[in-house]
Length: 453
Image (cartoon, rainbow, N blue to C red; front, side, top):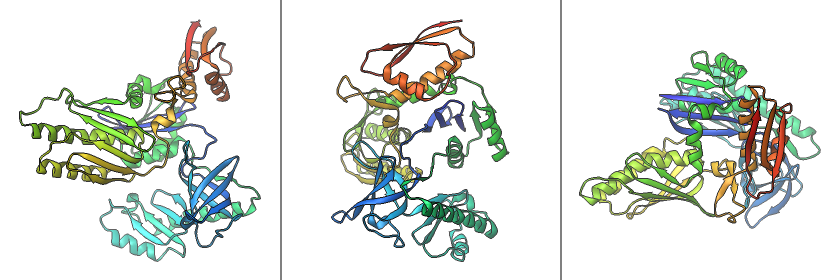
């Protein structure tokens, strides 16, 4: 049974999908001034590099991006100083600028509208693709592309027409807004809150129930999804109470233990992610080939679950146990092909060698779970990771919310200066009777030393 748990009450919003009490997907929504996937900016082209056929774009507020010239529609100038609306398709990192596109995308329940290309695509989950494609062909105009979503399988022509008109109006309104701008900057934020993420998760996993800790959010979901069971559970830390926090904490650890005694070792390098499959304490048949094949096959769904939860992207190298028979190799390859097709983010099997070395590629859109929630350790010079100041500040907010329900007279908290500053920037619990003590430590941390009622 699948269900969603949505923590919508604290400042840091989180939504997870669970299947039989096992975590299968997670998304964290934090308030941020950084560029995020889906954001649309009015950008100014600063420099064009003809060697790589790309341009560097000023997004305003000290933000910059990188765009391939082929991703700028023909209707816009491709010259230095040109002004174009662009959308973030991949978040930046320490070494890379955010990747942009001039082909703007607007998502709806029935279709995805893109301006700057010309094609019609239909979800692979829809059986009768030809009929829907013919309907849309009579509606689209020049420079318009449409992706018909699985929700539109039984939609009428009128419903599709209305969805297209709404998406087209959004685009035209945005272009008018851009024409009034004299400086680069944000035109439309994709971070419309936890509601959008919850909608995507409901569409993706079709849960039987949704549990949330926020009354107003629960009422909103009941209006949008009258057929869904929406459960309100008041809690200072919903994920901790439901045992989800323990599963999330394990996502920062390199070792994953499987139920059959085998294990995975996951490591992030500068260029790629590496996953090593170990037989561990697994006891199989006396035939070595059969034992190896069993361990490798059992590891496939867990590898894909970890990739999804940790939000790994780019090149992913998986070292399966070698020594498989030809039949075992074929079965493993078929399992990989079948299960990667079910992933909602494009994941492709690039190569699988006879020795069991697999190369996967996964499209990058957002930062990994590790990048979002941790920072390189300042003590061991980045050979390890510790919780970031933002992660600790959000944790402190949730913990204090629970403590404040008992109306304490005094709370003493020992913390590092960076965590204190980040927490104060949240502008929350300002009336809490907190006595702060700043610790001179390099690694961010906090400790609630005393609570007096």
